[in-house]
Length: 148
Image 1: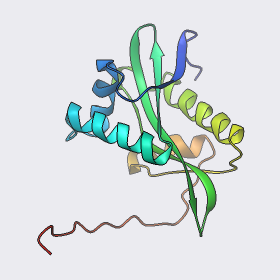
Image 2: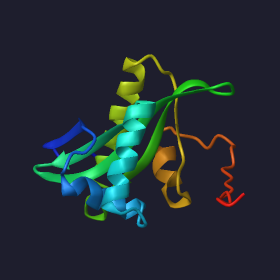
Image 3: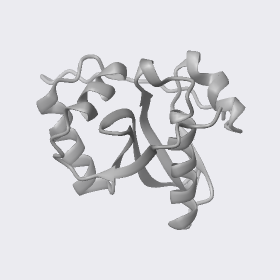
Image 4: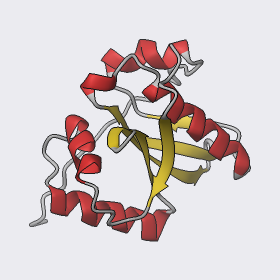
């Protein structure tokens, strides 16, 4: 499906006060309060070249995606996509595809030849339809006891 003709994709500066950014990211990160969102965004930008990318139609933010270049021994250099989310009202209207198109162009522009992202299982078919394939890694986590 093609995106709305007035859909804009643009990088946002850390601390941008547009409440639409938080409103959309909260769709995915429900436990994230506005202060923590801004603090983490600023830290990621300052320390890891993180960019928050917004999709907008008119004055309304319709989707948000974080991107950052990463280098690991196993994968080499790649673009990692964090927190790609489209507001429910705008899903299936080309917003997610437009954000991923931006990410792919950006990756090529900065000399990267692959993109990785973590996906919810209910979004796998969307990514597969755009050529993204599961890569076999299983994400594991351990929360550390602060008293140890």
